[in-house]
Length: 287
Image (cartoon, helix red, strand yellow):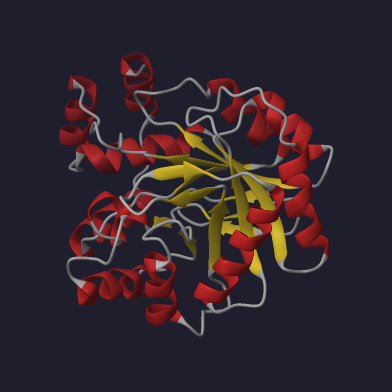
């Protein structure tokens, strides 16, 4: 395994994943539902991400639904050879924009095929199984669902498999079925429930994709974050992202935005190296 903070992570299963990725969820309309308010801007953000060297885009066909994957296809297809698109299955959207868990094995296979169609590819780089527990505390068995995706992997429709919203026990169960290259869970400077799982992923060569790295609906705020950012001539958001990249060798980030300026700010955080004393301050200040 090779890890470079601002570069790429090469995993044991042969997947190379950019550590500073881009989460495309915010390209859909309000509530991640319907078309974007400014389609041209959404396309510009995707193209700028690739221009900036981003080689890891996180998406799902239930963003929109289908809207975000179709934007990715319009903006970037045919895809650069080094671009890895990570998608996820496990939910549907109601007509009112509601999120409906959908973990029936047959429907999971249908969701994979819909991702293939809307992204315009014959095989998906990575498919994460989105589990019912948003915070990764679930204990229910995933054998039937993950097994269905493993079948599609054997057929060549999926290259690599991952989990989203997974507990340590569910990771162990999945690994007995097929290789797991990534775990995508909620983790940031203020929310560190997954500390042990972050360490486990690093030890086992699994990418840990921290979603909501900037806090999601509740933006990160702390005196320590503000003070460290001022000393380093960076924004608090950049410091929070840099802290995550230095948290473990296999942490990867997928911050989302619908703004080109915000995208550039996020990507620049990959080059920000926090001194040891700043890391210690942030470690002490977090949740």
